[in-house]
Image (cartoon, rainbow, N blue to C red; front, side, top):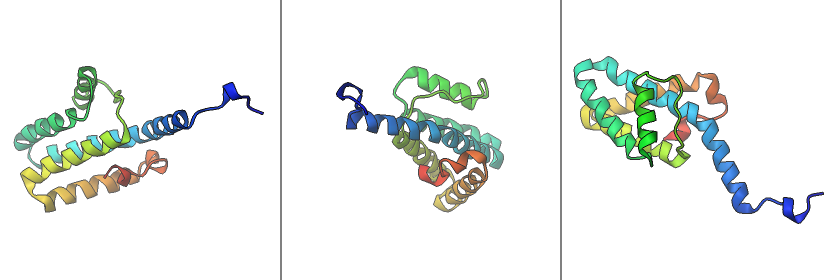
Length: 138
């Protein structure tokens, strides 16, 4: 039996649950983001360089610290293999949304929908998607 000092407060339980979801979602988020940017690059490298910069600028708005923005840029640039940022699920969703909106501005919503749908389907086939469905990032 747990004594009073060992009991976990509802707020602490909620934080543990949030941290767990974030830890499970981060690899899925990383995969979606990387595949999305890869798809954009494969369409037209010259135009995509500018679009990639726009997407990264929008995503950086979701990150709270300069260090996290630098980690994101290093990861996107391929200078590090692992995305190391402290970002909650809502901010992950906001980042995906900002990336989608940026693609809409360049290609229109129909083409942006096709790209995002393809990325989500590809990510659903990865083992990491068994624990967290990529569609939860939308």
